[in-house]
Structure formats: structure tokens, C-alpha cells
Amino acid sequence: MATGDYFHDLDQLPQFPGIATKVLRVLSRDDTRVAEIAGLIRADAALSSELLRIVNSPLYGMTSRISSIQQALLFLGFDEIRRFVLAVSMKSFFRAAMRLDLLRGIWRHSLACAIVCEELSMACSAQEGRDDRAYTSGLLADIGRLGLFVLHPQEYSELLTSPAPDIDMLEQERMLLGVDHCEAGAWLAAKWRLPDEVQRVAATHHNRPDAPGFDLEKMGQVGVLLTGVLGFDVTPPQRVYTLQEIRALLPHAAQYRFDPDPVTMQARIADKLDAFD
Image (tube, rainbow, N blue to C red; front, side, top):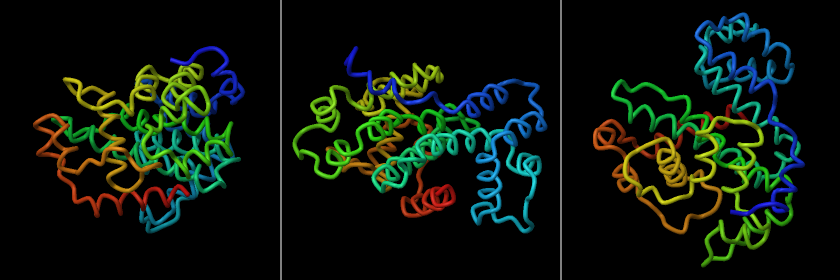
């Protein structure tokens, strides 16, 4: 693993948005009140306006306009708000560079991966319940790539647009920058005191998903593969998986619960991504 000076540039990135960590901390309590969350979100004008824009978008198909943060919270529920705050905070964090199409592609990949991981977590649950850790880990798995791009836009743009065909992308990153985006992501997640599972998924999301068992790390690995199969990849994969091969990586019972039509799933995810753009 790269050490020392290789992480010096990453240390120049600001702290992860405080509003996100505050909201996540409050939502983790059993006694959370809607008014408390509404107060936090109202204190951030950008977050408030984005919440109202998205909840009134065609994504939710509202018949009448929602005009208050408290209304939006009651309609969406705490789980959806947690996902929203994470996604919008992350997008805002990189907003200055988001005008670049390549960085926007990385962002859309991250959000698609979050949605995919959440759906995989539902398939892997006997009660078909969501695991919010899956969404969070999928969304933040590529923070290292986003960070490297923001710090080295020209070099990283050239790497993404003209990759060496026979060299693994992580190896190309190490050759160019001294650190790959998995190492960078794990380092940033630790610096920002993000949950342990985020640090692990950021570090291992490009590992081959052939380890025994099926934990959150392997879900992240499978989620990245499936995100690519659906057309939301950042760079062409060296090994192209089929949907059938990816389903075979899931626990046996989950394979029966997860058998989506890829065209329908791709369109549904694209609609969600467009709502956040």
C-alpha cells in the first residue's frame, strides 16, 4: 500500500460535508424526530432547495407540490432521507469540478452503484429489507477516484480517455500517481471518519468476488460488476461478466429473489440519476 507522500495531495481535500455527518448521526438514534432532521436540513440552504426540487420531480410523481422540508421528510421517510442527504452532500462536495463530463460520469457511476447495492441487499435479506449500509458503501466506494480526479484533473482525464489496453486500471493509477483509487478511497474514508464498512468497501470494491461467504465487502464487489453490466461503468472492464454470472455470485436463496430484466433495471436507475442531475 502506498504511504507517506503519496497521500499528501489527498490531504488537501476539505473535510466531508458536516451536514451529512450530522444528519447521519441523528438518524442513527432510535428517538429521532422529524422536526430535528428538518431543522438540520433547513440550516443548509443548498440542501433544502435540492430536497424540494427532487421530491417534486417526476421521479416521485407527486399530484400536489410539496413546499416545506417537514412535508418532504414525512413523505420520504427517514431511510430515503438518509440516502438523499448522502447523495446530495457528496455531489455538492465535488460540485466545482462536476462540470467536467468525465467527473460527472464517475458521480453517476457512484450513485448507480449505490442503488444497485441497495437492491442486492434486499435480495440477500430473507425479509427483503433494505440495508442502508449497502447504499452508503456503494455510493462512497469510488470516493478515491473522485478525489484523485479533483486533485489531478488533466492527468486523470488522460488516463480515463486513453487507458493502456493491457494494464489493469489500478496499476495504471499507481504508475501515474503513486496510489490507486482504492487505496486513496480507504485513506479518505478513514480521514473523514466514515463508517468502517465504507473504508473496507472503498479498499476492496475491485477485488474479485470469489471469497467464501457474502458480506458487505463482497456485495460491493458484485455491485460494481453489475453497475458495469448495466452500462454505468467508468472505464471498460478487463473482464466482462454476464448477468447470469453475477447472479451466480449471490447467495443461493438470493438468486431466486434477484432476476431483473436488465433493460428495465437500467432505465429505472437512469431515471433516478437524471433526477439528481
